[in-house]
Image (cartoon, rainbow over all chains, first blue to last red; front, side, top):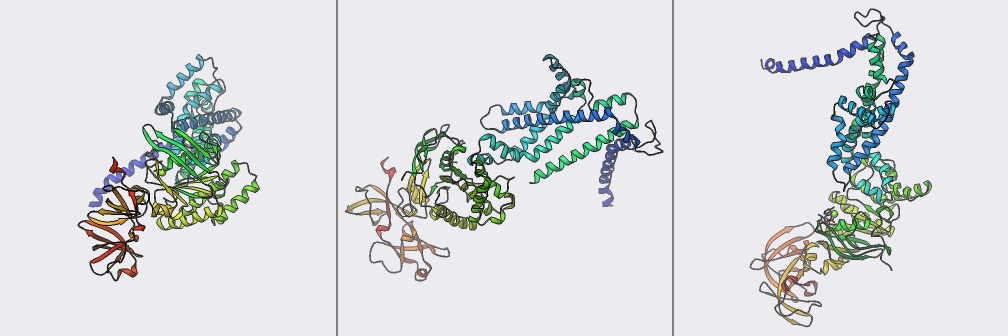
Length: 264
Length: 361
Ligand SMILES: Nc1ncnc2c1ncn2[C@@H]1O[C@H](COP(=O)(O)OP(=O)(O)O)[C@@H](O)[C@H]1O
Ligand SMILES: [Mg+2]
């Protein structure tokens, strides 16, 4: 009797939990399942299974080009955002600089501004300074978006850094540049790597900013969007599945890295 | 010989707060020098100014005769062992020690040779490839020491490096540190608030109080002939007898201490009758006996408290109403002091006389 009463809320919680998991996974599972369907349209039942769609995707020049383009933009974004983010984080923890709270608030702002607003304002901004839409504009937009995440990750790590590590390096003959590259940066290392992978994922995933700032060359999300508008086909499912698997793997690896960094 | 370190009228203030107050100090090469004082007296600030991490508000700092007051830390030939060691966590023991050598531009072979030599000095050869996180406290301590010694600094600065260790290890490291200093012949400038540590290791102790130097000297002098009440209280245990001068005759002054008449040698003080003086009397200078001593100061008293300390017994002897003397008795002598009534006595020459500065204000 006791067990029945006390187990009732727990049982319902467990039920909700599984319902939630189902809700999370069902669309993804469906999408993945359809990518193996041996027919030209997306619908049940699946009937025959095939890998043909994957073969087709891997031979799709448009897809491969979009992948390459997305990766290139992600790489540039990551480089720029990491450099800027670490620099801002260093400013925030540095002694004798005023307005550190304001710097922090400004650096974090892009993370909370809605993507739509950010995209429109960036678009207005680049046309004001006569910057053409296209690669550079996309990288600019993605970087602005990614910087706050790098700042927060770098800052968390920097704050846990013993203050006299840099003093010790200086004491042993390092100027401030050498001390930064040989002591501060390696100390940031693991956290930074996690932050960089996060930048890559943010950039590859971004649609709204890319849509407003992009030129004629489609990035991966833009290509998939264009294809969806031309009608659903299992080929799109195969594309999406590939993207999902790769990004999930990279994301999990990043999580693993930051976890290991924290326990060190 | 030219001093290795010179502080020349050095002041350091943080806003209105004076951390170091007109410091004048010169330190000879090859010595183990300790800055000793209570927490907040400006020891670390002095050390950090010498290391180049703080700039004096005024005054000059000279290293081997060269004015380095405005030279950045990486251009000064001094190295610090930090209180929490500050080892680079991502570098191996060998890499940590090699850091300063690499920046000096030594070639790989020379670096390797020097690192092995230093690791051998502290018996850590087998730990060269470990990370600092994989070492014990004492081992980290040794690595920090070797890292700072590696570039062959003019002076090695140590800011309370032993305070994080437990008592046993601390004593062991004190001996080891002193041995390393003697073996290398380096000038060590050591900071501590622990008077025992200072007495154990130093050739010279500089006692600091409120940003100023109270007294400087070798451990024997500081312990045996403290120059101020502060030093007498800070170093070792002590009986401070505040007394009035009742008469003088040559080297001997007759004093009245809470109504008890004693004699002391006022040194060069030439006190006047009626003036107040402090007599510093160490517990071990007092002789306790059942029979009346035949010479020196002697007072009849009652034992009020016995504290067994292992290698000695501490007796609190009441020599007048509410007037206590802290004495130290060796185990072999304790047995004969079984009664309450005893005599305490001391040779007047073993006590130090200090003027009462406040009496003039
Ligand atoms: N960066 C600083 N800002 C303000 N006050 C300081 C600073 N560093 C030290 N002080 C003050 O200067 C005094 C001496 O400090 P310190 O040299 O660290 O003492 P010690 O090492 O003898 O304990 C202390 O009262 C301390 O509060
Ligand atoms: Mg200190």
